[in-house]
Every structure is written in structure tokens, then in C-alpha cells.
Image 1 (tube, rainbow over the protein chains, first blue to last red):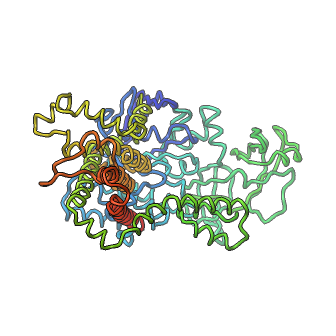
Image 2 (cartoon, rainbow over the protein chains, first blue to last red):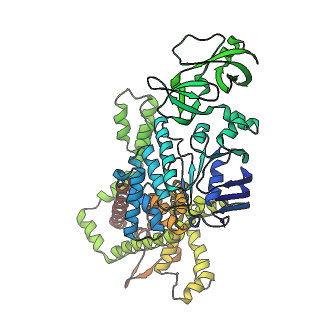
Image 3 (tube, one colour):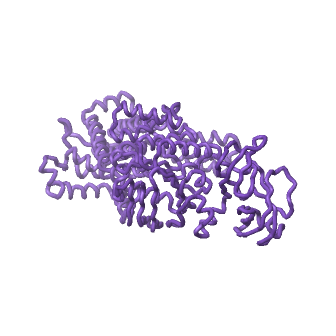
Length: 348
Length: 290
């Protein structure tokens, strides 16, 4: 378990303060916030890499506030992976074990076991510069996990990956977490990532925690406009998936059945980008498989674009340009149709 | 984009490369003028060196080299500059690391202080060093008690060289450490490495190129020092002989016997400096390709 009490970190031009968190053993915990919110600093404070001005950090019932990083039993993976460029993949992974002065035989055994687990056995002799982003990511994970840390800290680990690799790495992370049972603290600015991976989420804004809760709680009851705005960027639902015809599935999200393309069954989460939803006054005759009727319940102007919330129920957040907003002459309480393709729904 | 592509202008200072790339298109007036000016400055550097070296026959050069006064002077210069550089590495690299990694009050001042040896006239450096390291003064007394004297001794040559050449090593090493991503060190720490292991296993190997090229510059600058050495250690006992560092030997031969007599020694000194310098730089660049 990690406990953070009244933490304050002062970097001169940035202040992290009033941080109180309790993260359970084996939990997959997400710290969510925009760039500059202080996410990395919080992570580094847990790791002992940033000096703490006030407050306490506890890991597994032990106060570590003043303990040096090498004694905290933690591992860290940065966004750019930070592999040691002058060492081979093998030497990168072995670095932590050598620091702990383990025997050569034990190092060899552990390195090949972890390499096998994350799938980098064929890369062991290579230099980091010759690896793809996804491969470097796996090596960084292996390097952190091989020392059997109690806490694994991930700093935007998926941000630099292309969407496809990102999705695969999410699966890898879930799988790793299931097998290793390590407590993971994962920092991200991507709400979908938070929902896809996190048991619980802490939303960080400007050096303070805005809200802590499960992804659903944060979606349903955002505690502030900031959190709400953050949540607005995605439509996230949970539902029951059942098989339909020709590869489609029906997902019941509480009264409404959506068509999606997935092989998953049972309880699933799904997300839908606001910009993938078309709003119209009359039902659209198109090939899109999902067409629903609802009432405009909220309108939020954001520069050249407008977020329109349509209550079906549940609420769908749609993103349209200012121009089409004016053409449609939308008003709160107006009856509209929303349309989106089955393939626009991301099921996980 | 026209001729002087940034890649070419930064990597190769030979004018021929610029000509090569401009062969694609008609060179503009400015490039022509710049090439011309560049050629003038390159001639200015190379002509005197070349002229001095080719003015003596190989036989005369060989005989000069066999002159005890000459070879012991050259050995003394190489040796003392090397000791100075090693001392600089031991004492200066840690400071360079601190400067690269930490922000503290007065850091700017400190960085300025390190560069001061570059701007002080070197004869003044010699006098100032004598005031501290002379046997009647502060540090001099301490060292004297363990049998190390600086006035007219190899140790004096070393500290004079070290004083004037340290900035080259410290500045270069500092930039080298700055270029090492601090996150690499942070990761190393979380992986159980002590600050020592993180430094010796990560930061130092990754900054080695800058430290090495800084060492070459420090060694070269030290070996060519005249003023400070002249005052502190003009004539020193060196492995059973008495010797002067090469720059002083050249100056002495010129003032005592004239241009003609100074010329072969000068040619030898130039040649050896060039050979060592080119050798070291080749080693440094070969590492870069690997």
C-alpha cells in the first residue's frame, strides 16, 4: 500500500500541495491530468527523486519520505523509456540485479525469465537505439520488473506509441499486472487510457488533486468543472455485450442497445469519440448502424468547436464545429437524432 | 535551400566541401566572398606552420631531435601536461558534474571563476601561483613539509599548466554531463544503484566523449603554456637532466641565437604537437562511430 499524507513539493516555479492519497496493494492506480498538472513530479516524489518539502510518503507500512530511491523497492518507466544507450538490452535489464549484487547465475536466470515474459528474448543482444518504440517500452518494463519492486511507477508509458501499438501495450500492461500483482501507479493525460486500465483514478490539476474515484464515479459525478471538462473528451459506458449477426455485437448500456464490432461478451466497457457522432434534426438515412433519439441537455462552447450533450438516456457528448452548430440552430431541450457507426465504438 | 547546408558547414571546415555542394547550382556572391575569406584565414593558420616545418631537411630535424636539450624538453612538456590533465580529471570532473546537475546560489559566479584563467595574462598567473605555492607561503609550506616544492621543479610546471588549462576540461565535461538525460540517472537510482554507481555506470560513460575531448584540449593548452611556467619553473630537474618546457626552449633559442637557430626546434615542436593532437582526436572520433 502507498499512503501519501499532506505532500508538498516546491520546485520554485511549480508547487505540488495538499496531496493525500491511499493506493491499495496490487491496485492499478491512475493519476490523470493535463500537461503541467504535476503528475510526473508526484510520481518522482513517490520514487524519492524529488525532495519533499512537507508531508509523508509511506510504502507498505514503512515511512520512506527521507529514504533514498534505491532503498524504496520501486521501479519506474518513463515516457521516452530512458534505456541506457551505451548498454545492450540484456545489460539494461540486468542493471538492477547487478546493483543488488546478485550472483551471475541468478542474474542470467532472472533476465531470461522476464525477457520471456514481456517478449523481448530475441532482442537481448541489441542496443536500445535499434529498437522500435514498442520494443523499447517492453525492455523498460522488463528492466523495472526484474528487481521485483513493490510499486511500479509508469510515467505516460503509452503516449509516444502509435494507436495500434498503444492498444497492444494496454493489453500487455493489464496482463503483466494480473501476473505480477505489483502495485502500479500510472500517469497519463488520456482519459480513455485511465478508463481502460485503472481501478481508480486521481485527477490532478495545477498541483492539487481535484478528485479521486473509480473511472465511472469520475464520469458520473465530476466534482468540478475541470474534471467534467476532462471527462467530456470521451463517451465511456459500461454494458452487457451479446453476440449478434455477422461479427456485430449488441451492447446493452442501460436501456439502449448499441451495435459494435467486437468478439467480447459479457460485461464490457466501451468508448466513443465525441467527434464521431453526427447530430441531425431528422433521422439520417445512412449505413451507420446506430441511430438514437434524444434531447439536447447541455451546450459547452470551446472556441471553434462546441460540445453538445444529448440525453438519450444515457448522456452522449458530441463534438461539432461552431458552423454546424449554428446551421442546426440547436437549443437546450431540443429533440435531435444522433448517429454513429458500429466501428466508431471502441470496446474493451 | 541553397549551398551551405548546415550539415556541411558544421561538420567540415574544409572549404572544398562547400565547393562540392555548390557545384549543383551557381554559387551566389555571398558564398563566394565567405569562401574566399575562409581560405585566407586557413592560409593564415597553416602557412607559417607549414613553412617552418618544410624549411629544414629531415636530416637536420632528426639531429635536432637527438639533441638532449631538445628531447628532454619535449618529454618534460608531454609528461607535465599529462600529469596536469590527470590531476584536472580527478579534481575537475566532479566539479563539472556538480555544475551540470545542480542549481545553487552563486553558480554563475562560480562558472565565471572557472573561466578566469583564460583571461588573466599568464605571466601574472605565474606570479600569483608563486605567492601561494612558493615555499614561504600558504599551500607551499604544506606541500614543502611532505617534500614537494614548486619553484623550479616539475611540480611547478604541472601546476602552472594546470591553472591555465583547467577551464577547457571543466567546461567541456560540464556540457557533456548536461547532455546526459537526467532521467537515466533517476532510473538507475530506482533500480537500486547508489549515487556512486549511477555516476560511474551511467553518467560518466555517457559523457566520456566530451570529457575525453576536453582532456585533449586541456593537455594541448597545458603543453603550449609559456608565461606561467617561465616564472614558476623556468629550468627544472627532470630524470637526471635539467630541462625547460618546449615553448620556453623555442623562445630561448630565438632570443639567444636568432631565427635560423630557433627554426629546427620550432619545426620539431610543431610536428610533435600536431602528431599527438591528431592522434588523440582520431581516437576520440573513432569512438564516435562505434
